Structures are given as structure tokens and as C-alpha cells.
Length: 450
Image 1 (cartoon, rainbow, N blue to C red):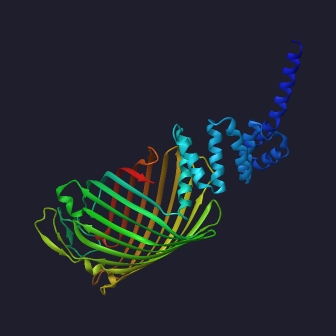
Image 2 (image 1 turned 180 degrees about the vertical axis):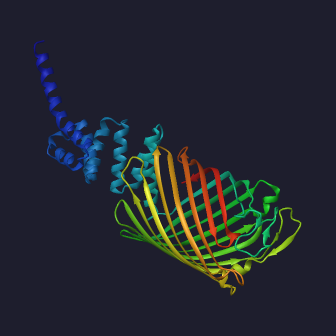
Image 3 (image 1 turned 90 degrees about the vertical axis):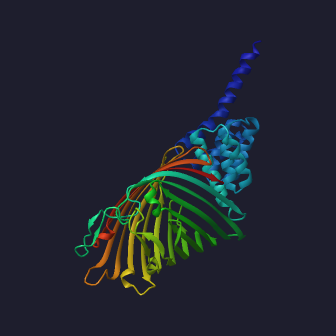
């Protein structure tokens, strides 16, 4: 009976001695001193096998860039405590760092059930990264479908009725004409699929297709309804920190259910990941824009049919764009993107007044202020100067377009999301026919199949 207190005291001393190194590692981790935490663990090899020590040492090893030791320590811990979610997450992270994507995905997916919103956000990020990495060596495919409703203050980018500034007296837009500013609500649908097919390490084929449509509510607005069909494909090559792409895009636009525009684009892009925070890119493209003549009406009541000779606008468009993307270490995961572009459009119907030089700037950003929420916003500016006077005796057309947009998305789960959008465009022009202001809001429901 007198031996029992002595044995209890000895056991308490042994437990305290075992806990001391683990507490030291934990304290260093909380201070962000990962390497020192790992070295402190290495200095106490006799503690390997103690569950508390293995847990904190495993995390320290992962953070210090020694994932092999970290995985072994966490595997030992989970043999004793298999239901510890924190250890399961850290082990999955270790497998991810080691490049064991199958084991990492299995571990992360096992944590999805019962995950809190902030936990699910982290899990999904790793699953997305695994899927992106797998595309380098195995075929991948994704698809989406989206429906939306909204309201647009100027569905046709029209102008107010009356005398048009910059044009001779008597050149007016009468009320009810299709060039008069029109507002209306709308419905939209979109769907698409894309995928990659690796040919060898670093080299892959990519491709995809999308369809989209927008229909307006008023019977008189159906002349502005649109459908878009697009396919794209090409080659991507990943070498070190550089990603190269060369592709071909084909897009068709219908207006009022009539074939209106075909765009064929050859595009090349180079992306360079300078470090974990900075990515730079340069892109160039050339597009052949082939407009089609369509039947239309001068008025919304459809009493005065006209042939819109849009084919005179057919052109070739060459452009180059440079951009910088910067991410920041913050709980909101903010990212900033700045891009500059230069372009030249050359008319193919001997109409220099429809040829132009363009230059522009866009600044945008994204953040995640709360789990499952993504906020995005941007500002843009683009200037155009045309190649000849608008008409005999008139000025050469000059436009400046300013834009702003903001969106807020909520991820209901891994597949479903809801997004609300707002866009504002304001174009100034010395030819009043091309001055307009436009605001649009939309609410969209999206399903992503990964």
C-alpha cells in the first residue's frame, strides 16, 4: 500500500518529462518558428513514439520542409488516435507535399463529411490543387451548367432619343427606334465542358466547348436576344516555372436567332511563376472577325424592316496583353491582378473609318472574407482611335470606355454556388451615336462537376 504513492509520483514525473519537449515544439509552432520547432524535436529522439510528441513534431517537420519524417510521425499518432481530425488533415497534407496524390485525395475526401465551413474550404483547396496537378499525367475533365436572371439598363448600348451630338442637324434618333436606349430584364443559361489529355510529362492537349444564351422579357426586345457557341483547343507545355500555351478558338454569335458573327482566334500565352506570390504573363492573339448581314427592323414595333449590312465591319484584330498577378498572405486570401493591352483592328472591306488602334488597362482583385464566400471587383479603361473621319466633313471617331464590376459568390457545397454580379459601363465618344451608359445586375446559380 505504501508503494502506490511512490509509483504514482514516478509515473507523474515521467509523464511531465515526456510532455516537456512536445510543449516546446507546440510553443515554437504557435510563434511561427517552424524550423526551430523541427530542430527541437530532432534534439529529443527518445520521445519518438510518444503520441503528443509525434503529433507536434509531425506538423513541425511538414512546415519545415521535411515531409517524410512528418508523415511517419503522424502515422504513428493515428495508430493510437485514429479519429483525430486534426491529425488526419495534417497527414493528408503530408501526402500532398510528398506528391502521393491518391493517398492525399482519399484522406481529404474522408474528412469532407462533418467538416466545418472553414475546414471544408481548406480541404477543397487541396482537392482542387490535386486535380490540377493530376492533369499533368492523367486525363481530366470538368463541366458546368448555369442559369441566371437579371436586369439591364441599356440592353442595346443605345442612346437617348433626339439630336445626336457630333452629327449634322436633323440626324436624330426617334422614340421607338431600335437604336434608342432600351432597358429590360433578362434570363440567361450557359453550359460548358473542358479537359486535358497529357501526351508526355509537361506536354498536354487541352480543349473545351461552351454554349450560352440570353433572352429578354419584353416582346419588343427579342431583336436583341443572343446565343453564343464556342470551342477551343490547343497545346500546353509546362517547363519549370513557365507555362506555354498555343491554341485555336472558334466562336459564333447569333442575334435575334440569326447568324451574326464568326470569330476565329489564334492565341499564344506565356506564364511565369516567379515565386509563390507573383505570376507574370504575356499573351498575343490574332482574330479574324467575319460579320454577316442580317434582317432587322428600324423600329421596335417591327413595321420598318431593314437589311443590316454588318458584313462591312469584318476585320482582323491583333492584340498583345501583359499582366501581373500578386497574392498576399492574409486570412482573406487576397489577390491583385493588373493587365495592360494594345491592339489594332484593321477593316477588311476597305473602310479605314472602321479600323482602329486600341489600348487599355484593367485592375482587379479577389478575396475570401469568410469561408465559402468569394468577393471580386475590377476597374477597366479602354481607348479607341479610328483610322479615318467618321463621314465626309466630320471628325475621326474617338472613344473612351470606363468599366467597373463587382461580384459576390457563395459556395453552397463543392458543386453548387450562387453568385450575384453588378457591371457598369460608360463610353464617351466625340460621335454621339456611340455615347452610352449601361448598368446590369444578375443573380446566377451554378453547378460545377469536377
